Each structure stands twice: as C-alpha cells, then as structure tokens.
Image 1 (cartoon, rainbow, N blue to C red):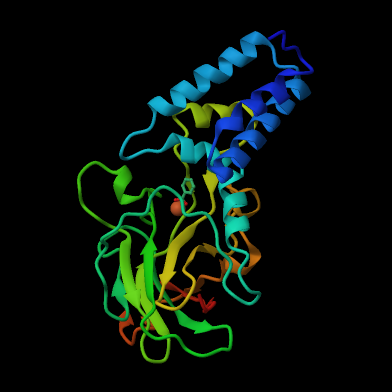
Image 2: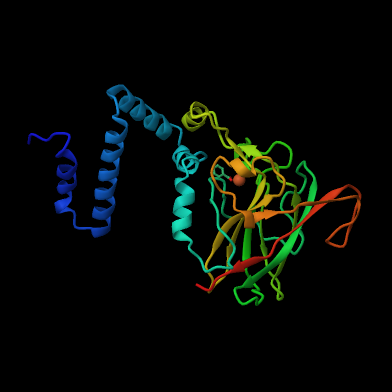
Length: 285
Ligand code: BEZ
Ligand code: FE
C-alpha cells in the first residue's frame, strides 16, 4: 500500500516472489525495471501512455497468418538484429548472420545444380554460385541452402501477391566439392509493408521503409550450426540505411553485369545477365 514514484518499481518486482521459473523471473523483473526507468526518463504523460496503448492494439490487429506487424516493429526498432547478434556469436571466419524476416515459407522445391528459383519472373537473369566450407576450408557436401527473394521488377514476395502460386523460392544442395549454383532474377530493393502502424511510426520518426536488394539464404547441414543470412547487391542505394539494420559488409556481393553470350551454367544467354559468387563458411555444431 501507499506506493509512490520512488517505491513502485521495487514493489512490482517483489510481486515475482512467487514465480518458480527462474528464467521467467529474471526476464520479468528486468522488463519491469526497464519499463519503469523508461517512463521516468521521458516523464510519460497520460495521453502519450494512451497513444502507446492504441498503437500496440492496432499492431496486434494487423497480425494474421500472412502478416506479422509485431515482428516488423521488432525489426524496425533494431531488436531483431540485436537478438540475432546475441544468439549467433559464431566463431570468427564463419558467414555472418542477419535478420530472418517474415517471408520464409517451408516446403520450397529442391532444385538441381543451376536450377531456377524464379522461372518466368520478370527481371534481369542472374546466375549465383559458390561453395560451402567449414572453418578449416574443407568442402561441406550435402548442405541444404534455402533461398527466397522477391521478383525482379515489382519487388514483391509470392506471399504478397494474390493467389497461391509459389515463386522466388527453392532449395539447392551442395555437391561433393561443396559447390552450389542456382539461377534467379537479380533482386531489387523494396519497401517493407508501410501501410500499417509500423509504417506510420517510421514516417513520424522521419524514417524510410526501404530494404536494399537481397537474396535470403538459410544453410543447414547435420553437424553444423545453421546460418540464416542474405546476399546483398553491391551498389544498392539503401545499403547504408536498411530499414531493419540487417546489412553487414561481409554479405555485400558484386552482382556483375555481363552482355548476352556464354552463361556460367554452360548455356548461351540471348540477353544480358548478371553473375554473382559467394562462398559460405559454416561452424561445427
Ligand atoms: C525481409 O527481408 O524479407 C524482411 C525483413 C524484415 C522485415 C520485413 C521484411
Ligand atoms: Fe527480404
């Protein structure tokens, strides 16, 4: 009883005395202390408090099986990348990780060497290849790489387009020499969904919703730590201000423009294309 500005925080934390889960207790007491410190720091007004409640309510209402506005909120506030950094302090020399994002769909088809993940999609034809190795430089064969990206003209994922057609997705497997190769269309920069409360928040903060062009990759192989990351397109204007803080120098790849002619898969391309090369390094589990 009689709690005041000075005593309320300790009192709220003390209510965890009956909590038997030590990790939950650690998390909730820290959360309460940080929330209270924040309210004190900005001296939150009652109307600002109510705006925050309305914002969070609207954020919840914008979530469904296709859209996750809370993840978008976490991404745009840098929380997702902080969780990623804390959870992937991998040995040096391994491929850097980055944000998972909301557009992964399980069940993409496994494709042969030089298989096409974006057959028929508009955009510049693109050939991507490289190797997967361990930290000693040994080839890893049988690693599965999940790939997903937008089309090359509108910058939309399949799940953002009406209908159930899967596009811009596939899985490739490394061969005995640890090599992988796939065809796609050159990814382009796109905006994260900005028509909801998170988009409004970004505008009010003077921020833009753009992500630099990238291909999502997720590598899995038994005995190795999985890697979820992107290959970003060198030269993209949004690399330095990615709306979700996902860019790392080591993930920026030269997508080299080539004229029509012999293509990396041994075929003859009748149109200009681009070519990218990237070598992944996985750590033992
Ligand atoms: C993405 O790259 O797909 C993504 C990541 C975070 C928020 C929205 C989209
Ligand atoms: Fe993406």
